[in-house]
Length: 330
Ligand SMILES: Cc1cc2nc3c(=O)[nH]c(=O)nc-3n(C[C@H](O)[C@H](O)[C@H](O)COP(=O)(O)O)c2cc1C
Image (cartoon, rainbow, N blue to C red):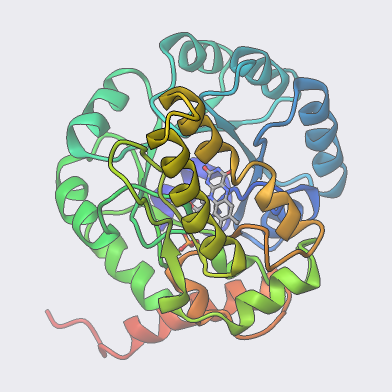
């Protein structure tokens, strides 16, 4: 883990994957204090709100942490400036390929840039564009996902990207799994779902309870009903909202076919269904109608416990796996 930890400035090369509404000051500071690398989720925050959240996190920890910015945010460059003004050392660009000027602005000011690489060709392009590290996130992950599993992405990308550290994400719940990816060439891992039930995490008790009850097979990607009306795949625990989403798509498509809605209006209507839904679940505790974004690793979330205990367990599993091999043979 030395390369990844050196890059992040943390004790262990484990990033707390940014989770909108979940990864705020308390969880992020707790992760960094406990030896991992917390990452604040900017989500849809406006620049002044992000500045406030960064300052509040810095008040809780003097350890390094990063900020995750969504590339389609209309004020992306202003958000980068907020991070730079606050001397945030690492900016994670998520949700698409970041525009060149945003990468350059961050790097010119000395920040390190971390990008998501969904395929080998894009990984190489991102490194050429200045990415200082990459995250490869498999479809096992919670939230917005690509189509390829981490198992396959790791085999496709890790042997070919050696110039920058690569962190693996998606479905990671135990230390043995991290160890195996390190052996394939990863520099560390990014974990989201397993930290949702950290005692320090402010998510609503109902949200945490759903994670403790949830099994891997309950965390499914959104279902798209009609190929003319694309739906962005999001992995989440199934609830009344996911069932209603299917009915909603069917109804909107029926109205489009009946000439009651234009194609654009129908597409927008489908896209708007989940607006604000993650907040409703995480903050308000509406686990029936809100979005319960969760990775397949949700089955390995057993109880609420401090971040330090979760990290200690994961690192002990990795260490035990190494010890079980016995002394190295000459
Ligand atoms: C509730 C939730 C919200 C998330 N929000 C974001 C986000 O705002 N930005 C982002 O880049 N990734 C987001 N993710 C993905 C995580 O950062 C991380 O990559 C993912 O959770 C890793 O997979 P795992 O959950 O199986 O550990 C989210 C994941 C979850 C579960």
